[in-house]
Image 1 (cartoon, rainbow, N blue to C red):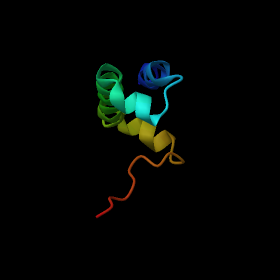
Image 2 (image 1 turned 90 degrees about the horizontal axis):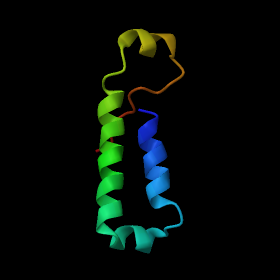
Image 3 (image 1 turned 120 degrees about the horizontal axis):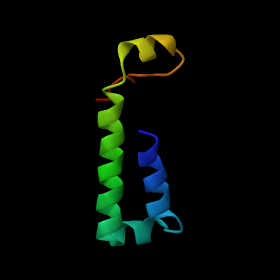
Image 4 (image 1 turned 120 degrees about the vertical axis):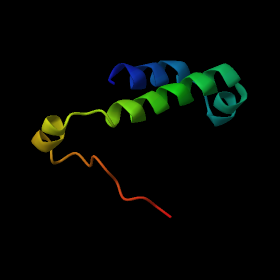
Length: 63
């Protein structure tokens, strides 16, 4: 889970928003890694969640 944000940072280093959005490969790779972060976060064991109540494991959904 730690490696995914490191990849996102490496992929997007030096890009502004326009450059990021115009580079399809970087955009797709970044999106994929963000999805992997979300997927990994859903698999954090309950014992870890309980031991770290300061972490907002679930945020309220916005409608």
